[in-house]
Image 1: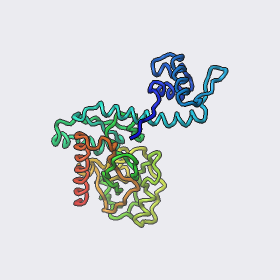
Image 2: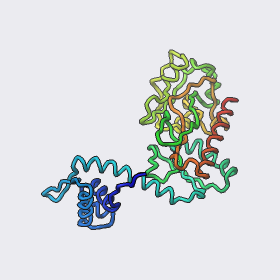
Image 3: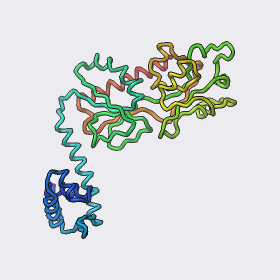
Image 4: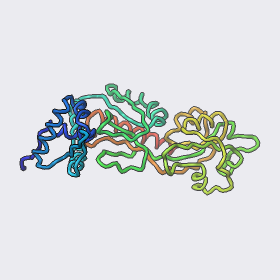
Amino acid sequence: MSRRRLPPLNSLRAFEAAARHLNFERAGDEIAVTASAVGQQVKALEAWLGIPLFVRLPSKGVVLTPAGERYAATLSQVLDELDEATARVMRSEASRVVTVSTLPSFASSWLIPRLGSLRARHPDLEIRVSVSTSRTDFAREDVDVAIRFGKGGYPGLRTDLLMEETFFPVCSAALLDDAEHPLREPADLRHHTLLHEIPEGVPDFMTWPRWLAAVGVQGVDASHGPHFSHTFLALQAAAAGQGVALATNVLIGDYLKAGRLARPFPHQVKGAYQYYVVCPEAVAERPAIAAFRTWLLDEAKAQAELDGVL
């Protein structure tokens, strides 16, 4: 293996900070040195490379040269990866703490109700649940495992399909046996109020028009009815007898088991997205993370088998 030609690390840190801020003083504040020290480190790096990285302006500001822009972009990525690797190697392999990030709806409806099962299987595991609607950045966030809602394909991450999502109508028991317009088949929905969920930023989400088209039902006006921003709000409205909601096998929670909601007919339609368990390949086999991932997949399999029985 050939000997690496690496510039001094202090010069790299100073340059990368200065490139992000385009200001030596702010870069110095970040790495706890003076602006003058940043300037000296940058000059040393330019001398080592033999090319200018900044153009000094009369106003005492700086701009990156084309070579500096390219070098800064690559260097920032390398330092991010180094930061992630350092943080993870400092975390003991024997640690039994697992931080999991997921969507608020999934956490409240599926994950949290099952944590008792995890404690029974792994009483020594300490789970920290973080909720977010943004994609997890493992390089910058203190997260070990994420549960993502999407179509898969996450380069660089260990990815396991957790659950496929299916959609089906639900309503209160009283509405199910409505004296005038009982719900016996999808076409009967034309007599009832449809409750809509309109999540933001989710293209191809299963709406009532899409669901009705998928089961071949015509003549149902799906343009009216209350709209809700979250699944649990639509389910609460349905449980209160205000109409028929589209539920998912993943987020239905205990509504069906408790009898608060009922499925008027067995028709269901597969959604465009699935739930995945993802984590960096480098930590996928860490004992605590592997145990948590295995438990998640076992719980999802058990739920799928139960759904098949139902």
